[in-house]
Amino acid sequence: MTAPLERRTDYRVTFVVLCVGVASFSLLQSMVNPVLPTIQAALDTDQTTVTWVLTAYLVSASVFTPIIGRVGDKVGKERMLVVALAALAVGSLLAAVATSVTVMIVARAIQGIGGGVLPLTFGIIRDEFPREKVASAIGTAAALLAVGGGVGLVIAGPLVDALSYHWLFWIPMIMTTVAAIAAAIWVPESPERTPGRINVLTALLMSGWLVALLIAVSQGHHWGWSSPEIIALFVVAAVLLPVWVIAEARSSQPLVDMQMMRIPTVWTVNLVALLFGFGMYSSFAFLPQFLQTPEIAGYGFGATVTESGLLLLPQTVASFIGGVAAGRLATRLGSKLLLVFGAGLTAIGMFGLAFFHDEVWMIVVETTFLGLAFGLAFAAMSNLVVAAVPQSQTGVASGMNTNIRTVGGAIGSALVATVVTSQLQPTGLPTESGYSHGFLLLAITATAATLVAILVPVVRATTHVVPGPQAEYEAEHPEHAEV
Image 1 (cartoon, rainbow, N blue to C red):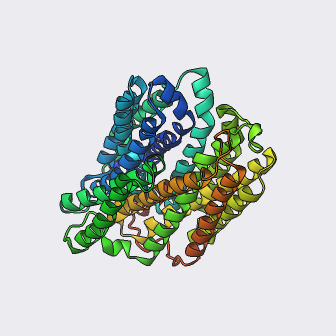
Image 2 (cartoon, rainbow, N blue to C red):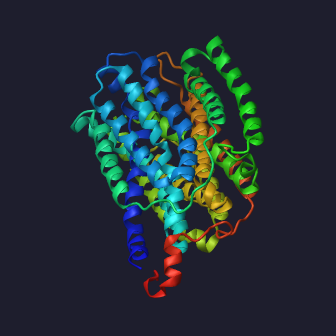
Image 3 (cartoon, rainbow, N blue to C red):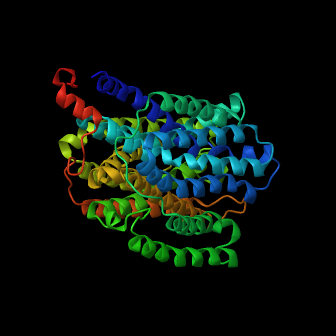
């Protein structure tokens, strides 16, 4: 009778370990962006080459997030969590000591393997936590992705000013090393496993179209959208994507179950994720640039990297508040309503940025709205997907949802970059209308996300939830149940 009691006392510790892992991954997503010119100068490379520091991480995370989620469903989520955290730690160590841009790019690709932390986190929460705490825990963990992105923008400048850019990687390395050791010691084994083998062919097909698409959209601005290389990559992606879908549909052991992907709640939330990622990740990339534009351009505020990060601090705080509150609000109002509200609030914030950006207080108010929206919507999306699929497919389903958001962010960042830089001043800076049109594009996609969110079918949170060990123990021992 002591083993179940130990299992019960472990779930709080488990949650701390999971949060450290998710926070480390999300920090690595955003901290590098504001200081890319610093890394370029330190490693003595050019602007085109240094962008691969971002692209390598993006492509690797997109490929490995659903794959590691699926492998976790089959061989054990806790085991794969240790692997994902170890990859983050090793990649961060390599990046911290890198003396060439080639080593830095390889290190970032290794870090991308850690993208599996998020789907594994959702699966472990569903397996191990008391049923009534699942929605709140998933909401908080999901919001950490948005919060970490904001925190990365805030602390990157001060950290580089006080120490060096190497500490952008030393800190996540320390965090993930501690989390990996803690996961190996305290996080219990998976009670839920999916039998069968990993479909290597479909994994390669999925990796192929993802790599081709993401390299094309991330490098198109530098190579030229009409260049033979970019056109060839788009053709490869267009050919491999339907081949992958057909192969998965015909496979007896698919990597990604196409029947699961056709569940109305799953595909509608994934479409919202695509549109939402389009706006959120693009705002992370272009808001600091807008704030740092020198006033001689006729707009902008001439902020330093540190100052622009501090101006976005209210957004980060609002994201955390939204994510923490989302679990309880979902119990009362439903995750669908939170998703609609979050997407709608995003549209309002983006429209505000497009038309009202002349004063600092305007930017702070609008980005605070965006932060609250990001926290609510991330939590709602994750809860809706997890509730809609069988427990044995939690990892791959949430992994694909995360992946689709990332793809949306890559596409959005590429398109917004093209819009913003379509007209340049004699100084080489974008015109104010370029930023206005870019923010307007993001407002339109957020409006589309709101409309799709309205169409998401309502799913009872307990439809597919199978009580985990904690719930079973509390059923047998009500005197130890959470109040």
